[in-house]
Length: 483
Image (cartoon, rainbow, N blue to C red):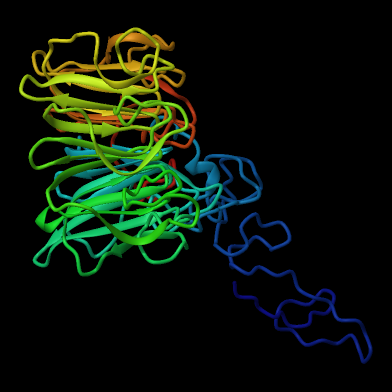
C-alpha cells in the first residue's frame, strides 16, 4: 500500500498555493486518498485498490475490490490456508450462476482402494495415489499432520513416484509399493509409535518414506500397529508392535517391537494379511498359517482365552486361496470350490453364520456352498462378493452404516449392498468400507466423521454407497468470472 504526503495547505488555498499563515501556525493535513479513486481513505471501504463505485455486495464494509469473499459476509477476511480465497467462500455452495470454488472432475477410474482406521487411500488408472480422511498422524501422506487435520475429498500424494501399484491403510498408518526400473519399492508413513513404518525410529512421518532400501517387495499389509510384507524368494518380513507376538518372529511382549523389517521363518510365503494384533499368511503350497493374539479364536487353532502365538502355526489341513485378518476375526476362501469360511470374534455375527458365538476353527458362512471371488474383513463386519452374481454382501456391525444396505442396524444374515453389481475390489476398514465396480468407479459407505468416505460431506455417515470423485481446486471466488 503506497501512501502520499500532502503539501501544507492554508485555509482557502488550492493545492500547490503558498502557505501564507505565518510562522508557528499549525499545519493542516490534506485528506489522504491512497488509491487515487477520489474517495479519501477515511471513508473508503477499500483503500488499497481503486474502487470509485464503492461496491460491497455482501455489505460487510469491505469493498468487493479488496474482499477475499465478496459474495458472503466476512468482515474478518479470514483465510486459513492463505490461498487468497476467504474461508467463508470455501465452506459454502455458491449461489446459482456463481463460479464454484471446487468442481468435480469427470468420472475417474480406479484400480485399488484400502479403507483404514479413519482414512482411505486409492490408486487411479494412471497409477497415481490419492488419500483422504483423518490425518492426525500424517497417514494421508500429504506432508501435514495434527489433531485437527483431515481431508474430506481425495488429495493427490505429490511425490517423485510415477507409478504406485499397491496401497494398504492401517489403523493410523499407510504403506504402498511403487514400481520403476529399479523394481518394486516399499514406502510407509503416518503413526510410528511402535516402529510400524519400518524406518528404524519411532518418529512419525507425514509423507512417504522408503522402507528396506535394499529390498524389493511383492505385497504389503498394514495392521493395527504393525506391518508385514512379502518380497523376493518368498520371504516375509514384519515390523512394529509385538506385544502379542503379531510379528511372528518367535518372541513377544513389550520391548520386542521392531522398528526395522524382521524376517519371519520360511522362504515360501505367497501373501500376508495383518489384523489388529494378529497376522495370517498363505504359503506357496496354499497352506494357511496364523500368529499373534488368539483370545477370540482368530488364529483358527481351536484355542481361545488369554492365548497368543509368537510364531506361525498351521490352520488345519485344508488348502486356501485367500485370507483376510481383521481386528478380532479372520476369513479365508477355501480351495478347490472357493467357499468362504470365517472364525474368531462374533459379537455382531461378523462370521456370517447366524450364531453370534465366537469360533476357534474355520466355520462356513450362511451360504455354505457358494463360491466367492472377493472377501475383506473389517472391525466387527465383513464384506464379500459371490462369483455367481457379482453382488456385494456385507454382514456384522452396522452402527455406522458400514453394511451398506440402508437399514442402519446390526445384521447377521448376508445383506446386499445397495449399489451396482460386478464389484472388482473391496476393502473393509474400522467403521467404513469402499469398493470399485467394473466401470472403474469408486464407492464408499459407513462412518464419515473425518471425511473418510471422500464425498466432501463430513461428518455425515452414509448407510448406502456414495461415489467418490476428485475435487479440483479452481481457486475461483464465487460470483467472479476471471475469464
